[in-house]
Length: 443
Image 1: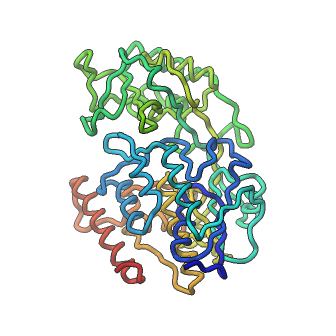
Image 2 (image 1 turned 90 degrees about the horizontal axis):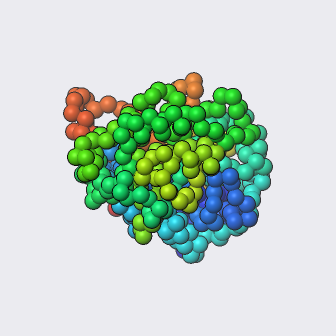
Image 3 (image 1 turned 30 degrees about the vertical axis):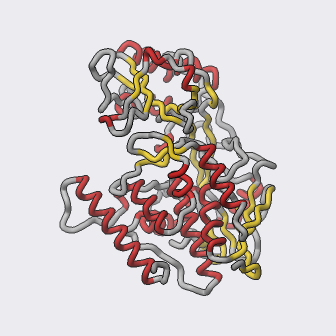
């Protein structure tokens, strides 16, 4: 049953906005979902679809006893739309949940547009509604006009740079210099591996650290703050000669069938689509100029003739100083009918952003109904991330992705890491179910 008397405004149809709109609409309330695409695109967005994935097509680990896998299971139990879309758009990626990003977006878009309680309004939003329950999920690349209003309302915002990796065609790879395998044989030969010997790595490394980078506009170009999770490969390489060889190019768990030995370094490629015609360079976020990407990455034997469907790009992301501004239900302390969701709140990662949208949507409904906010226990991954957003005591607040380091410890301490993570996951799901039952959200 649709409730048109209390319409909720959701600004932005990225991952967080889609999940927020889905929660509100399924609760029976009318949603006005504003999305500026395709009238206007941010510097990083290319598709007109909702829930567009930019940096990578991986949603990280699938195992429930991993931080990323636990987060997705919690989201499923709260009625997530995007975890369902992800399973249906899944592509092989070993132990990770990776998706055909076009299919994933198409499914999310169709579900939202066909929902009887959702009205999609296309065009840029340049102001914050003065009344009514609103969820702002405009993303870390919020358009300038709206960003100025958010900055004015919140007394400033923080910024950092984010980067995306290139995508190449499968048919352009030199498979004589590649092999298919997943690390430690986890998966069904899901990755294409481009090995390098020591001499090839040395040549690649020297070219990488001396290559010309694209200019960075509208920010502190002398000292840009780069988020560690999407560190450009060339910036990482400057930290030390072997930094990337022990990072995204690590050969551990792989054996080159041509030599029978572990390579000196390996570049992994992960499939982008169900047809397996497109692959992205794992960990190769970059800000090199496009011709330099082709030249430098072409020194990797398997990529000598690679055809690029998308070059890597770097862009500015903006997030709030949330511990000073937001409650753990993602509402603004000074205007509790106004909610924020997504990466701009200080969560980092696709599913983390989507999870914040779920909580913002649920709590927007609860505010309409005069109920107390749903604050999940900090023994759950969603609750711990919300706690980081609202209560972080760090003097240099930075975005946080799902990890077990933000969990309260289990006593007595479990020394074995795998057993400890299993215990964390079991406790989290038990506490989540109890919390939902106490709040009348579970049968």
